[in-house]
Length: 306
Picture (cartoon, rainbow, N blue to C red):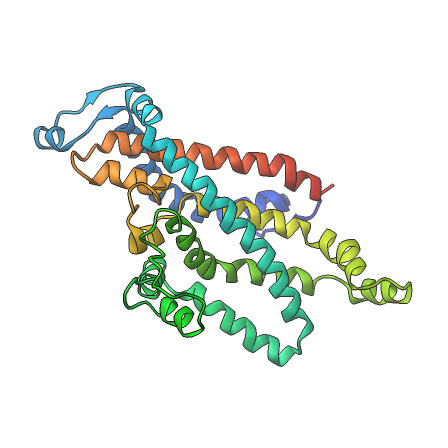
């Protein structure tokens, strides 16, 4: 094991312990910043906290009552269903598009790829709420550019209410989200492609392997570890999507775009402002994300690291 010699230590320190010491200030700061909000939210989730209780300053202990009310609410399960659909569409599309675009960039010259990577990163630099507002204008039923473009191309005869139709609203929200978050996956996949030795492709070409065989036998196996990381991260973030929902549909029409994070927000801040129930729903969402991450780690990440 690698060891680090520090002058003010009498004995050598292992690399793992040295890394812990160096990261300890950051861990303490994160603990101070996160511990209180998370702990206070946990306290709220087991108390009856509404506007009336806030005025009186009296918060009755309810135990698991708030959690039970959330799990018994049909709207919560509608939100979970919409969240799952949203997550499957966005994460699946991101992985497919990221691999395809990264492979395309990898084939271009160094000068061109640098410009392309800069342009690709632009959507990722846009704040989520601004991204949602931009796309809400594009989706506008009367003045949206999307309808104008499709009408000029002869693809539609009448304007389409993309974000106002219950059948298309959830799918319409996935496009802005994918557009904003796709650069993250592209950059990671492209970096992984840069780490694959060129000799492997040269040897495969000598052996007569075509492009598809080189992809399936060399590229894809070498990308599986980074794909697993992207899958875990993007699933966690997609499960907690909020800004695009707020800017484009605000959960409508009806409950067509109610997702888990929007449910927690509405329960907490819409009358009668049930802060206890909102905190409980947020903790349930956190447990669901953690469970999905553990499944990924056990079934996917472990497989690609063998």
